[in-house]
Length: 191
Image (cartoon, rainbow, N blue to C red; front, side, top):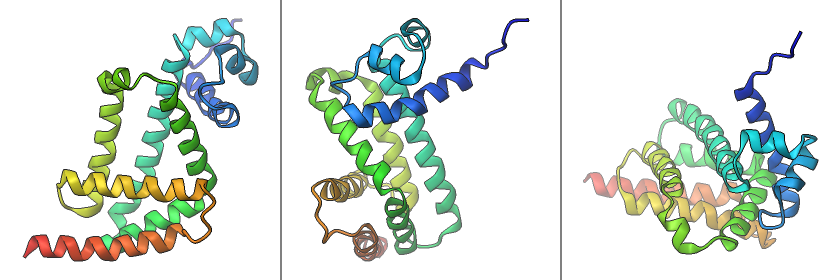
């Protein structure tokens, strides 16, 4: 009797396992052959599920982004106030620091290997940014694109500081300070 495979679930498993391969080698150094060897599947199987390394990577980014947004969004519904929500973000970043740092390494390496104009023309990255902007709108309760981009840049910046081994940067402290600042800012907007 032939084995019944849940292709959607199998694809998700391959994506999840590929994260560590990208984290260990970097996007630029990984080939489909490296991925297939690391995943324990044939290259043909990998190409069956993903037409290219870039397609696999973009699907990985999509899956991981969806997971992170679902986790954070679920918590936001239970938390009142910007300061408390940003305190949660600080705790979340602290609890997932290794993962966040690895993601930042992978993303920087990815963008270093890509043509900047090609990336700008790819609507995948624009859609991804819009998902984060909507999350920040939910966080703040204010639809302000400049403010949303500031929050996203701030969080990316503290992750980069961790990469640079800046021991003075603490996710919880930075997010608490940001929460206080944004709470004052948003309250002034409402006046």
